[in-house]
Image 1 (cartoon, one colour):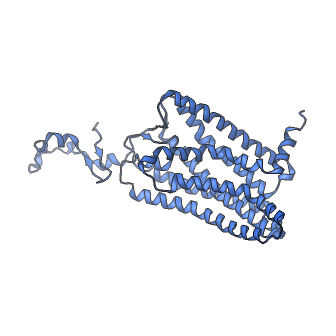
Image 2: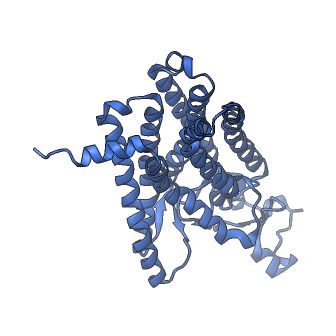
Length: 354
């Protein structure tokens, strides 16, 4: 078993410490071809093309046991509240016929996405906070990353579909029922899920066909693209450019759609003569607009803007907010200011038990 040489990420060359320490006397005499046996030659590309890492270790915020216990006590209620809140929203929309409209169809899909999304990251995070190993298998890391990226990408496009729903409801209310049909809502939702799955599959395949020769410590709380790229033992400049370009395009496309639709929405609201009418029209889109700002704002700071070394902890906090806190906020955003949802919740809770 040959020891694996260290790799210089800047020059792209392998380093042989023993040769540099012993001096030039240890270099074999290449003038005598018989002095070098074929079995003594180590072919480095064969080693570098294979990943020797079988598992990754999450570093998290700290190794202090008291802090980890505090984080566990913080994230467990967040996870439970998020799952229960989104389940409640989905049940209310399903059971109340008044809420069987396109807007609430999108909201139910969004709630289901949030349940799946947070269930991929937080349970493993809670396990690592209470475990001494804090490891994840190579294959499990790939599965977690695939689901993580696909659901977040699908959410971006789903928010764009919800923006289109708000646009038709505000700017062309007379044709709303003929334009935004349940079939159209189902097609938009399915398209968002397909785009998220295809994009995530490409990102995951690129990431997990790269060689990982060690170290295996991910400076993050869950499997994420950028922290994992730092562990690749080969030149990653081309991969980094491709991943960033694809990520920016995927985020930029639905964001442009959202900005365009809200430009027309605001213009239509300003043309309403009465202040009451303007307030009522704007209240129908306020929850969605707040959710868009939170998702795209946090995602831009966490994944699009360039990073520096002294921002590592803040990057973890942003990624944690993006992964754990945002799914908990969405049920609050869409229900606290919505009289129909609050009325349906009261009706469901006050229903007599059989």
